[in-house]
Length: 407
Image (tube, rainbow, N blue to C red; front, side):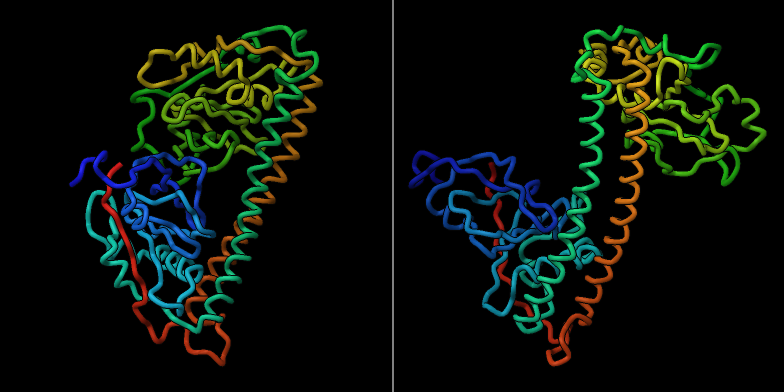
């Protein structure tokens, strides 16, 4: 092989990697560069209508190149698919491949390895349904429009979280107009008077995984707070008899729970309708003095407030893994907004979270409808009666190009 200096017309160009290919779209936001000579630029070019397919990792993940990409190339574990003739629309093909991946086709027929792998030679032999080209485009249009609805709802859900972040900073955080006048306090001073109002556990042999049962007293863990809001994840229970020895770890409505193991620093407020429950050792629990602090303010300060995050980062500097413990949580310093500010923010959080729940419910329905639409499309139920069947005949019409060029 010629050395880089001896190759003709070598220049550095950006290129797409596996990570840049999402289901149904290409992400051009994080491209890196490498040297391509004239031969490589011809071989690994991208033009409108090409389909880029992931060969490994999550084989079958693919996206259509929406427009010519002069000066951008592809590399490393990607395959470029160009139909051999004009009988196949690549948008239709992308939707069919997503359908096939959902059914496990690529996983079943790929090369068996630690990392899933579906090479170009197998993709070239991949059989696809071939209705008339106008039908392919009509089906692709239908699925694209339905998918666009799903994406807009996903974006709306993400915007609710961004709204809360902005509201926190403006209403009870450092962007508030009178922020500098608020007094600084430690979280420990905001605890409810009395014993055991800031706690972790149970530890060690006090609660073993083998002691979980199907019904009884609920046990909360990381999954209940990892989204920075309370959600029910895996359901865990202990018997009433076991609970009698662990009552000091009881979780009450409006407590703040904080993840201190695994994914650390996530926090949530326990809802009003919580059944009888305790925590695992992976959580710290704060019972607050509601005359001083609203739980939503404290919970969101732990994962949103820049000053609090800076303190956690400083405390973990030099550590192999970042972490939290009850002592660090107690010592965290915040500027305390007036209680009426906190209450207004808590009320806003309630309204936004309710909106988010409605959007998530609608998203779930949209996902189900889209999945049903895809099933209908590739069973032939969206094909006009005057056309041939969606699934017969099948034909091999793909030309897949791959590369082993290393960056």
